[in-house]
Length: 88
Picture 1 (tube, helix red, strand yellow):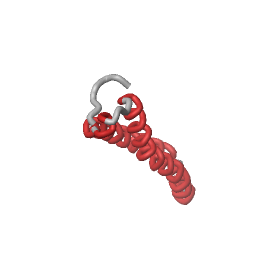
Picture 2 (tube, helix red, strand yellow):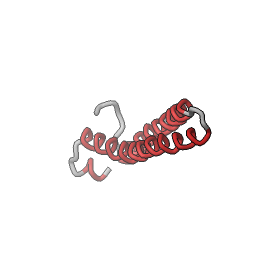
Picture 3 (cartoon, one colour):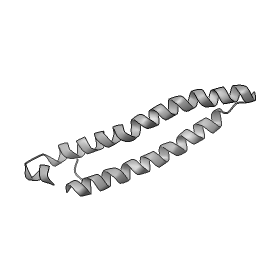
Picture 4 (cartoon, one colour):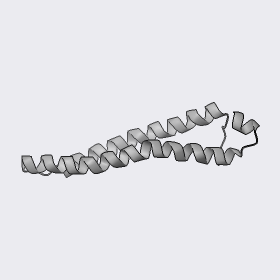
């Protein structure tokens, strides 16, 4: 990548990539988790039942999916930038 040719440290680039993508996937997940807690709670009170396990399982499934997408995105981003390897 261009930044590597300009002398950027690959470890700093890796950390920047991972931080940027963590915010891109982590913040929406956090908002989803908080909003689903309240919306599923409201639905449960209207149904006069507990839906806590439904909420926990659905949030866990979304977490697993977003984690896979995050890891694939990091890998693709690092490959596009020209950083591949185990250091960092």
